[in-house]
Length: 321
Image (cartoon, rainbow, N blue to C red; front, side):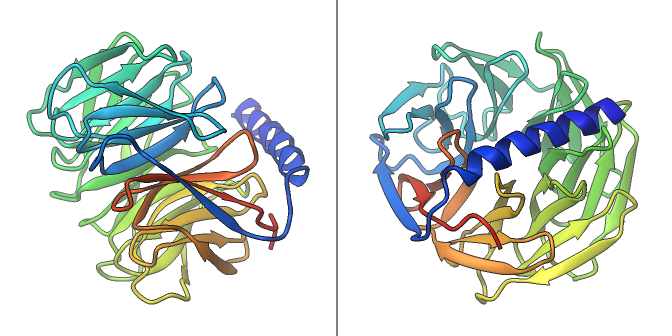
């Protein structure tokens, strides 16, 4: 456990140093149109090749965009998969969920795709993330389970105690466990490597917790799609909520920032939000219905616009409180 924490802190220091060298003062959004239209992009992440990789739900493609904005699309072998979220795996490939196809997909940096079926029918695989155990973990929004898939494609599923909870967002915690959101259950869940689940209620009723990520403070931070707040939960399960200035902003995905803050998309507000570890929120332009969000190795923030059919890049922000 101590080695995991030391590793995370070392990564944080490197990223903050990188970020400090790329800071300026004027926020600028640049949009790159996706060739397939309508593609309905949803998730985006950074690959080990330094490019950004994203999913196209309606386009049924996995997209890759360089730092210069050049987009390449790779079609899924099976029609109608509706790829949802995507993450880098420790094997160097990108792994993604197929919401309607009921599969977990893997794409190499060369664009070769392999698909693995999920045992539970119509499980609705949603978010996916690597765990400290070397496997990939994912949520099943319709199957009400947390899934684990090995690099060889072997799937194991763990039922969520609360019925019809709609587990959605998922993130590794620095405690070695995986943490997830329950939209309808209105809870934050924690699952150990052995599959033991503990749930913690969110104070605001019908908050619809959605995206979640770990912060440099060691806590988990999450969006409240219905509550219009950003939540923070400690490893002990203590929840604190911070309101977003824009009404009905529908905070969506969230990522840890290279500056030590948390950054999130506002699906309803069309903005990108930043929240400090002290809970101070600042908002920036974010295009049309932004969903997935991540930072690139270029020091900029990258996101996808579901309705705008673009990949967006936010640059020139003063990276700090």
